[in-house]
Image (cartoon, rainbow, N blue to C red; front, side):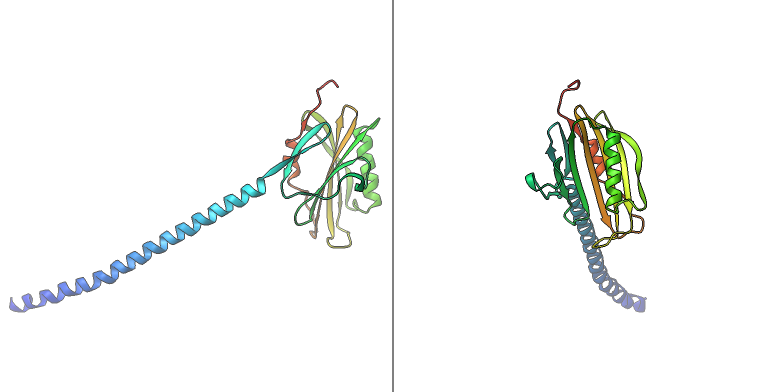
Length: 210
């Protein structure tokens, strides 16, 4: 009995000795988990804010229409400097891989004529070596638009490939051409993904029947 009683304090002391590092370890683990959660939450917050910035848009007001486009598409030329007398807008992305051009043609011209003209220009400029054709139609705020696409992977310069999508949109007194060109070095270049949202945001500002 005496020996067993003498051993008891030693056992209790060992338990107390083990308990202190264990509590420290648990505390460190808890802090690490909280740090990971805080870092993850911060990362999520950053990604959400980054996404919101990417989704931010501004509105362009044309003569008879408006549409929204990303805020980081900067206007490049205006007024008398425009290369085409019917060109009303040219935008480009901050990385200079995306260009949007809007031409407002008034007169006896149809979407079919306008898209045929686009095909000729694409051929002359070497922008339709892989594809150069009308590929479909869609509505733009209730009005029909022909969709022409020109694709090439034989460019010289900063980029080797290009996709040019043009929507020839009928209006009461002519045609609006919305042109979206993407540059890359991809062997299979892809069209500009933003254009669907832009065309979905399109609104005519004239009264129907005029």
